[in-house]
Every structure is written in structure tokens, then in C-alpha cells.
Image (cartoon, rainbow, N blue to C red; front, side, top):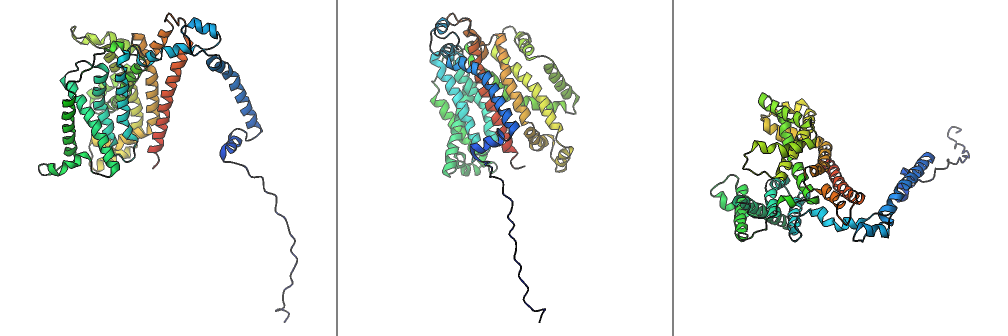
Length: 447
């Protein structure tokens, strides 16, 4: 009976748990400030010191550039009479048209705006998720857009072949946006309407032939509509400003990567002639500064052509800059190719792929993905290095900014134009840097 007795209950003593630390706000603007700027004594002290130093450094610049600046004036003397210690932005505002378009005639500047606008419109589909074959769109832009843009920028009689290619470029742009509209409406694309008819005669690749048929019909129609359309001739001697800088850097950036890939593959080639030619080109160009290459292109290139041939200085400069950029890009590409494991090459051989298929579909996509930061860094450096063309007499953005200081109304004004073009270069370079980071995150998302 005693073993089955009810056990005695004991009074449990209450022991309070230790106090919890206060909740730390880690979200919102206040939380970000506490975490990154005021997270402790030394962190707070360092934040105060840095902001104090920035205030002492930026205060004189902000007073000069904004508080005491002069925005409206007709001469530098008037600026000095209004505010002798402030920036004279009136000169930059008065010269803004020349800084953008150079000496391009004012009534014809709509052609530059239209040409650059067409280029932007052409590349916009690359950002749409539903659009496929983006590589084809980019390649078509590289191949056809220069003919259409040069037809607008230069004007005059460009020749029948140039006119035909420009018509094909405009037709392709129209067809591209017609297909985009049809895709978002959920309907068949333009070339698919010809596919059933073409299948009767050519069963294979009827879809591709359908698109080409529609492109041909649209090109003939556009060429017929604009057959009497003519533009006033504008020589490249009057090109300048930001427009000329974009033209030179744009061509160089587009051509630098394919030239670099070819030279890098040539340097790794097993054929001695191709290998030594690539090595000689890369080492010769990389051993001299860019200004030397520019002077050689202007002074020595005419020696290899007949005396009756008048070479265009802008074309010579673009060729020189493309070769210079391609030689540096070749070493970047070669470094990316060497980073690919040898097993990738062996795997491609095991499934029967040849050299070019291996490079195009297996090796280069991996190498280029890993080289995005280095490639964009080269592009940014190239965009800034184009200012050297001002030394050989091309009125790019830098030379147009220098011309402000020799204008009789703004004589001796040097600082404000240089600050203005520095801001422009920062905007372009920062945009390229941010786009490269976005592209890098997108390509590595599924890895």
C-alpha cells in the first residue's frame, strides 16, 4: 500500500529568466545608419571624421560651382563683374551646342539625333524578356546599322550599294518591331505567313526563308518610297564634340572584341604563320602608346595607297583605334581562354565537335562570361582615350572644350569646360560600369 501511495508534491521555486537585450532595428533607413555608420564608438567617431573632412573639401567647390556661380552672361568679363569668385557656367551653356555636335550645321543636326535615336531603338529589344535570338539582333545592328547611320550623318551621294544596304537596315528595323508587336499580341510573326507557301518548294528552313522573303519585300518597298529622297552632304571635317567622341569610341568598342578574339585565337593557333602574325601585331601595337599609333595612321597609312586616293582622316583614326583596342583585348581574351580547364576541350572532342564549333559554343561563352569585368574596364579606358584624337586635329569633345578658352568672349576660361566634360565622361563611364555589373549578375544567376 505504501508503494502505491500518492507522491508528495513539492513547491517549485520561481526562477526569473535573464533580461533580454533591447531589440536592434536592422531595417529601414534608421537601421541602416545604426548598422553601417553608428554601430559603435569607433565607427561613430570614424563617420564623424570622414563627413567633417568631406565637408571641408567639398564646401569650397560647392560654393564655387553652385552658390557663387554665374549662369547667364554674354562674356567672361561680365561673369567676373557679377561674381568674381564663382564659376562662369554661362560659357558652357553658350557652347553647349558645339560641345555636343561640334561644327555640324545647326539646321541639319536633326540627322544626328535621328541616327542616334535609331541606334537606341535598335538595341532596346535586347532588354525585353520575351524576345529570342538576341544575338541575331545584335549582329544585325553591327552589320547594317553603320550603313544607315552614315547615310544620315554624311548625306550626299553614297552610291547605289550603300543605299540598298541602308534600305535593308531600315526594313529589318521595321520588321523587328512588327514581330515584337505580334509576339506580345500572341499572333504569328511576319515570316510565318510565307512559311506554308515556301514549304511547297523548299521544305527545309522554311521559317528562315519566310523571314528573308518578308525582309526582301519590305526592303524593295522602302527603297522605292525613298528613291527620290536626298540629303545635303556634310563632310567629316565639321564633325565634332560629343557626337564625334561617340562615333569613334562606338566603332572601337564594337570592333575591339571580335578583333581581340581573332588575334587571341591566332596567337594560340598551331599554324606558324597565323601564330607569328598575331604575336607580331599584338606585341607591336602594345609596345607603343596610343598617340604614336594615331600619328602613324595619319602620316604613314597614305604611303601604302596610291597618290590619287584621298584618305579620310576620321576613317584612318577609327582603323588605328580599333587595331589598338583589339591588340589589348586579345590579351584579355587569351587570359580568359587559359582559365578554361583542358577537360572542356577534351569533352568537345569526345562528342565530335570541330575547332570552330568548340570555340563558338563551349569555350568562348565560358571565357567571355568570366572576362566581363576586364572587358568593360578596357571599354571604359578606350572611351576615355579617344580624347587623344584632339592632338591630331579632330574636334572631339576635349578639343571643343579647349576652344572655349580661345573664344574672344570667353578668353582664358579653362576650368569650367573641363569640369563640364568630366561630368559627361563620368556619366557615360559609370553607366557602362553599372550595366556590366547587371549583366554579370544576370549571367551568373543560374550557376
